[in-house]
Length: 599
Image 1: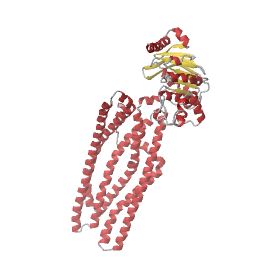
Image 2 (image 1 turned 45 degrees about the horizontal axis):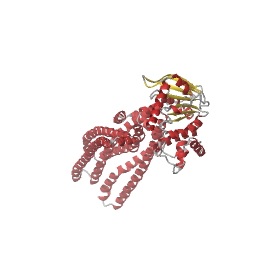
Image 3 (image 1 turned 120 degrees about the vertical axis):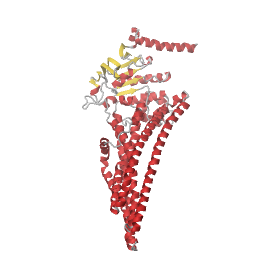
Image 4 (image 1 turned 180 degrees about the vertical axis):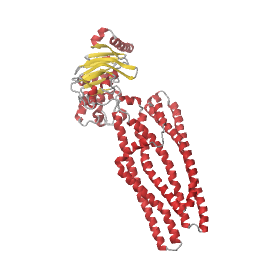
């Protein structure tokens, strides 16, 4: 998780034109709503800017002359501006947030679609926590940019420009007094941005550490409890959480200084204007209405500056998040289907490995020049010690990875020329670690395939003897299995995996240690089911239990990534080689266990 945390520390530039251009592409489908929101926003700001001027007119023109009719007209105009400001503000808030939510929806869907296209090797190298952050936290940061950043900046800039124009129109001397404060205001703002940048980095890093720690500990909760590590983990989380607290407190400290300081500068400027302007009013050089309007404009002058300072933090977070999101979206899958596939589905099911060599990491080969052929309907078992390359053969056949040397043929066609989805849909895999999704038993067998009827689901479960325990469940096939099948035993999940494979009726069946987690009684139940499942299907069986593969047509013995032996069970025993040794070791353990029980 160190790499993940380091990546979260990267803040980047506060504004990156390249990234902004890419972000605005997501705004393009909703440009009408965005333009309308900007129009509402600017119009609302215009009505708001006019209000102090109306007060000036009311005081200087009508109150001083005791013109009640004119005063009533100004009052009506003022109320109308308030109604317009409310209506326009409501409209722009609705439009801008609606646009932001739609952009978030589109972006999340794009990221999810892209994740589905990426190959297994990508997920081997990228922690789940990082990918979850891209879809959630980083997308939320971009939503804040669109709803509170990009479009709202127009409001701040327009309001600030309008106020400055009115200030100089009312009295340029007083306006120059306000302008004299700007250098100090800019200096304070720059210092604030530098400090906030550092505190934001600390907060971001602390959040990444909390996410990584929680993910690891929630996933491994059983191990933590089993070894009595609760107190140690609690103290470790306390340290991580304390770092997050301190980082947030530092950020709060800078905000607590900046905004009151901004208010102090604003109050001092207004006090100075009131004092100097009051002298001008007393001397007759300035009207009272002008002074009151000037004070109101001065008060509003500092609000956009404060908002723009906050927008800096939003913009900075959005740039960092967009950098990470686009880095993910720019990651091209290394395994892709051909532009024009020679074959779309597997028809016969023959398999051939021709001089296949493969390594996950450069310079660390896992398979060395593997060559073998499986005829349609043939049952071939693959055995060997842990790390011999058994599961790698299955991953290569399913084209989770591409071979670096040699080729793999299915029905005489290189699998790289197959339609990728068609190839994988023709291969049914039952893994040792069965993955079940949240949902019902039938939904986990069907896996969203509407072409598989309820009758087919029940027949598949009946064939592999899964219906024995399913019928005892409260809602039978409608029973929720929980997250990752938490409500079921390991053996029950394995039986559902067999039912799933049978329901999909694949041409090629792959069993990867599929019976290693099943007790002896359950194994006896499914041997008949396996015979039916493998009938008329090309089958590759990876197993540690040699008892499950004795009836295989051929057995391939792997050792350190090479094929050392090949033949039937009896032929390999007669060779008295690696397979014979594995057989002796396995059955020696069983005989010893029986002897101990007898004693």
